Image (cartoon, rainbow, N blue to C red):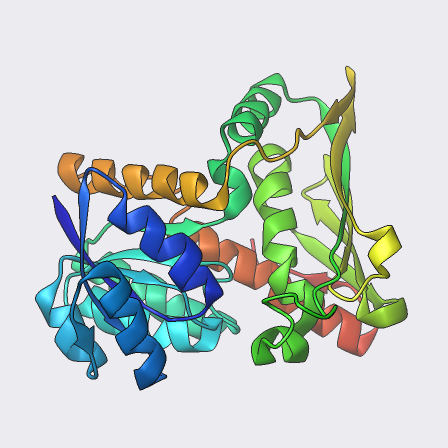
Length: 301
């Protein structure tokens, strides 16, 4: 039984992280820390666990941390937890800058802890099965993806998120898109980016010399034009990525299961760990530079 501390008190923390941890047979939720004392107390009471006012005290009392906080806050907590030898269950993106992502990776490597970054798509069984098959099949010339969300409508629980408003679709839904194309097409070597209407962003990515992908991302799309569509094209035709097939809570339980298995076995899977999270941040940072400077950015090999 792996004991977890939960960091965060927002909708994603309360309705997904807490529920997944409390309902998992291999975990025990041992406490909650948040930046809002009232919300922390309410969430802790809901699950019958202590509310912590000191983040480091909660880190000290558990074996693993589950973080549902803005990426810049997450990165610092992840470094502190990993340095203390605590396993990491984190959200995407890993951080909002490459130096912060590097700090997390370094701390995890030095302590040898297990880590999983919850790229939601990767823990939906239908999508995971498709990606594994597509990677084995090979022969893909590229991919195209559209992820148009509309979170700033009245009543949307994520519309008030300050970091999403500041950093936009590139950093919020961009990780979802990259988590699909990277496992099949491989690492990104060049990035071009252009801003579009309603703060959308449009990326063209080179995956070595063998493939390219195009991604169109938005958080403020007109409600009538919201869409999530991804497909690969290649020698054998078109491969359409299937829809998500489980709830976010069930998907997170699968991520938790992976983390628990790695802790028990001593293995370290790179598919969705902090190293993969850092790879995604590197592409996002390059895209931000490409968009801002109007040029193609080459990533280090």
